[in-house]
Length: 183
Image 1: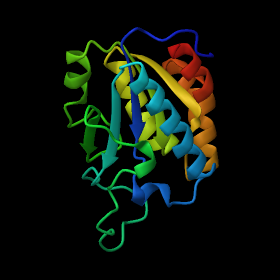
Image 2 (image 1 turned 60 degrees about the vertical axis):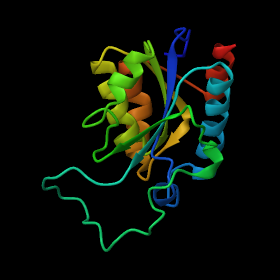
Image 3 (image 1 turned 90 degrees about the horizontal axis):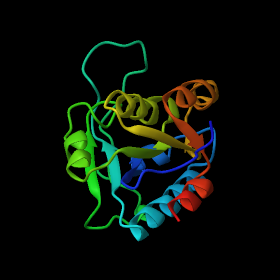
Image 4 (image 1 turned 120 degrees about the vertical axis):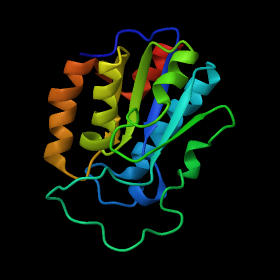
């Protein structure tokens, strides 16, 4: 479903746009995702709406069959990319799992500001963005995903999230359309 409206208290959540993630090979160029995300952030700030910058610094415990992380990541791995133009009023969330809600105070911070809807963008579509979108939906927020401001390392996982998962959680549209809805 295309985006039809934004609530008066909508927050933007940008997921894992950090130096260690944006350098990974992705389906769509990370530079385009960063550019669209920065445009969304500027528009939300111009309308005095919350901007949430999420970064990951660890991983959830437990076994999985994925490749093990080798070595220590570079010191700047978790630094948010400068193109996002982080502002003093932005909410910064540091997470240890895929989703931005679990184990953080994100829900409490959004509720304190009266937020009823979230717009999501970032990397990776089928991990951090999808997990955050699912949790936002479960927490009762209206969910919108800027589908041209998300990408993944796996083309099939990206397609599945964009075509099958996100439309079941809320609305989807382009960053440009979402910016127009703010006006």
